[in-house]
Length: 366
Image (cartoon, rainbow, N blue to C red; front, side):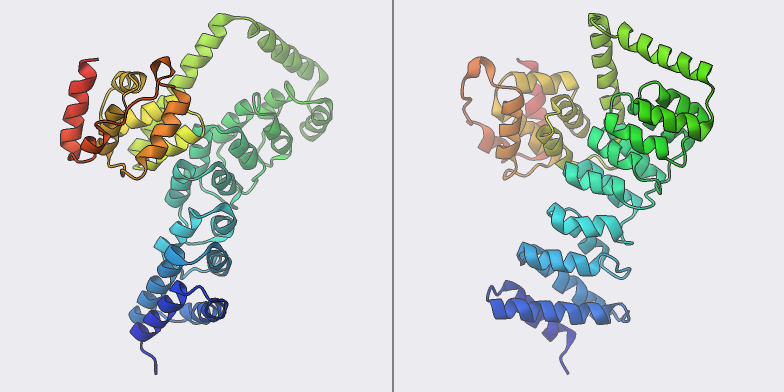
């Protein structure tokens, strides 16, 4: 009889092999392991599952990971660490895990909203029966595509306050309006608010569903038109919107930090989504520096200052070139010059405390 250790060694060897025959043998072995795993609670079998599956995720090609994700999507016994790794994989691999896995908790889904791509976030918003913390995280981040997916998810745990926020958001996100008009949690009061900025077809559906009175409907439309005209051509309105956006971003970063969900990986996501101010807020919060200090370091065009900040919060040196390129894309160096990377290597040789002290000293001298 093959021991758990021997079986682990044999399957890990198949993982590392790239021959077509071994690929098929590996798939057959995975299927057998999946079929028997749910019935077994033996520590040796569970340890084998962790070893084999994590080995597959780390070393196997995408096709194997995709088939594994399909197989494990509905498994209650699947190792949480493995499920979370698959949920962060390429979207075609992650999609069934995000949609179905009973292993994923609200905290895991919130982490995906913070760290994963936009496609992953949309899948989180579509997941059946997502909890109130996930709904609130989506509303806080306020991405139009994710909000539209949430509006179409009538199984989500949406409170009266959350529905109010969704209707308000639909004023700027047109894709939310049709699903919200059909949403089972829409109230007559909120329907009246929604009525002011939807088209004729949806107005008819809302009026019929909630038996809204014509005089009240005319008033709702008039108020919506007045609000639209008041915002046109007024610089003060634009400045107010900028201030509101900054305050919203500050609140979001503070909430993520308080929930323990603000991690260095969020910085890359903010940059990839062209959200420079979010990047600055997150870096300042994670490092303990002031936002103005972070902004001064970026404006200086000196990569070694950004490197010091990255060392302070534990960003790996291998990630820094990507982060620096994204920062320079959004905030080009002064005069269009190509900055020297002198001092970057020295920064990554420091301890976090030493890097923080060096950062403060250099920025204060700018």
